[in-house]
Image (cartoon, rainbow, N blue to C red; front, side, top):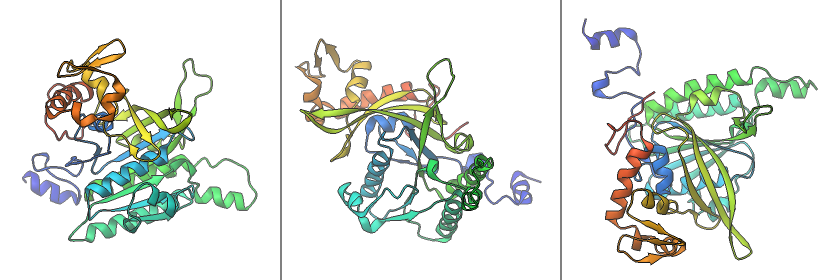
Amino acid sequence: MNIDDLIKASGNEHAGIAEKGLVSDVRSFIDTGSFCFNALLSGSLRGGLPDNKITALAGESATGKTFFALGIVHKFLSDNPDAVVLYFDTEQAITSSMVRERGIDPKRIAILPVGTVEEFRHQAIQVLDKYREEKDRKPMLIVLDSLGMLSTEKEMADTAEGKTTRDMTRAQVIKATFRTLTLKLGSVGVPMIMTNHTYDVIGSMFPQKELAGGSGLKYAASTIVFLSKKKVKEGTEVIGNIIHCKLYKSRLTKENAMVDVILNYDSGLDPYYGLVDLAIECGVFEKLGTRIQVSDGSKVYEKAIYREPKKYFTDEVMEKIETLCKKKFRYGSAIVDDNPTDSD
């Protein structure tokens, strides 16, 4: 028997020969709207979210996880005129006015309120199975905001009966849910963004954050990014947040890598913020006291660069930063193409 016969004999509809491409292969990336965040996730300024994986954005309450996710949704729909988004809302936080204020086309995003893990699993699987049957698939993005707020059917039943015992099956239910979803997302090429809460680990020697909901998400998500923030002011008015993004887990890029991005309340993610630091690191810019010497030799303040980014981040400068990003964020010096593949 040859290898094709062996695959056929297995009865596994998702099996394939590595040479011909696998279900798990990343074929393209979803631009997040931030060059630095793209590089953190994929090792390329032109990359972003893998097109068939689960990417989790985790942080404490009021870190901006929902705004961050909506910013990526806006960019995804802008870049893909035929695309749609399914947004599973567990917190009843999304309103029609919020969608419009973020510049998102309200006709192309469906909001699905869910309360339990089982409810979310059933609806997501139904959608993905239907999507798989479509001959002409339009790009689709799924968002779950947030995992930490989902209950379980057992927990709901216990609450209705007045029981206060903790549901010890929740972690197993979550793990089983994402084992199934991971394969289905990969087989049809649909990316998923998930937000989740973090909490401080009590009694640890060093300050540590842990994901809510048990270990299920740790194994299911290809990428987990921990978010923390500080406010950005213009005078006395708070206009947004600087978000510190640290890779907790990644199969594509180096874990524990960090970048900063700016999330503006009015305009969303700033595409260029953070590139000054990378330009200095690769030697195309030089920091001189309070000013930056740019590629043409002139000296300007950092704020001036971000006010006119296209003037300073020319194609030549961006290419040099791109070369740095491949070395800085990706695993192994051998990975130099613009479409890195998934690996464990």
